[in-house]
Length: 221
Ligand SMILES: [Zn+2]
Ligand SMILES: [Zn+2]
Image (cartoon, rainbow, N blue to C red; front, side, top):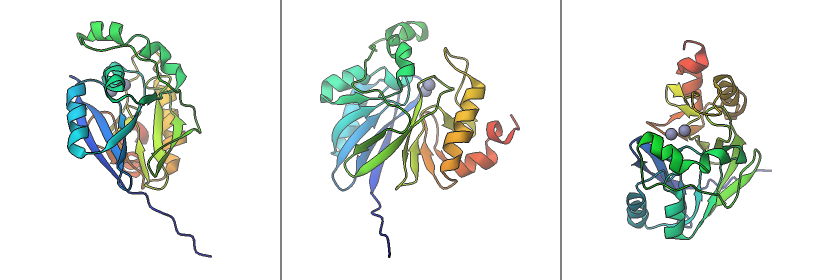
């Protein structure tokens, strides 16, 4: 018996938003042109312009975690597109309830607190068009951080859990460096060296590249 796996085709555009240059990602299914916006931290007019330019139909907003640079524009974008907000894990609710307060401390205005339409948990599945993603709850950077993983595309959206050459900061409320390293080594690296990822800040990488060279994973940090 020969198994044929349909390799779903996808496209992605990164829109750096907020003073933190957060990688808001527009991800779409090539077959259906259905799309999702991941982590609309702010600069909503620029996100809307990117959607129009790409000519895709956004059907949802996905959030990797509750920090202001990832969620500050989520409520405005939801109102503009009339779509649901999905994620992160409920353990980040205290962050989503305090986006405006957080903006005050960072000197960032024009943001809103946000309540997702659906929380995500480890093992959940979300999809857009013909694309399907598994949810991995990866606490450490924040308690409710989630990673979106596509088995078929060997691709993940990791938020601020892991970066090219670094890992997420753990000095913010609810952060834990030991928990973060545990999330990365127990949940992400076993998915395979060939899995590429887009992260919340800076260039993407692959789990294999990070396993071999990231100083926080090799014990050099
Ligand atoms: Zn963060
Ligand atoms: Zn961030």
